[in-house]
Image (cartoon, rainbow, N blue to C red; front, top):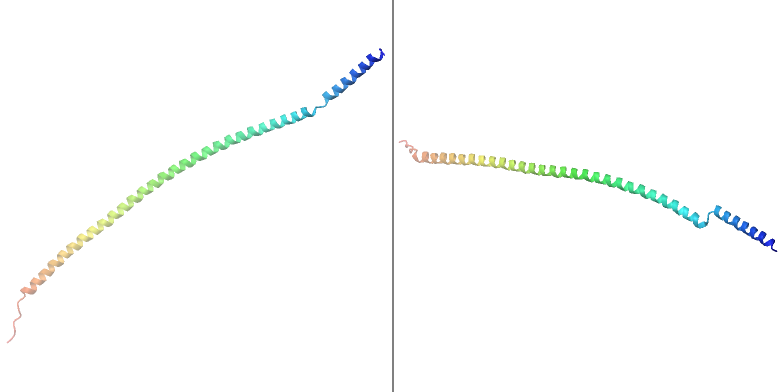
Length: 137
């Protein structure tokens, strides 16, 4: 039996060694899962980096558009104020023009009234001064 034991232990050791070697060659389910998760993590990190770059790009575009719109708004406000000022000036000029015409027309009418009153007065005086006609015999 003494000869059998060393042979049996060698045989058991060889079987265990072969079994261990075959296990090392095959991935354990946990190692395979870990590699899949690591690959997914890397892919997700890359996707996240692309999204971050896209967000930065979109933010830059948004900022540019906002600045452009603010500039356009400032121009519109400026134009609106200029138009309001011009409108006020036009209204003022028209009112002054109409007022001037009315004042001039009023002065003319007052002058005509004076002239007509003077003429009426002359006619009254002529009627009163007029000699009476002589009656024929």
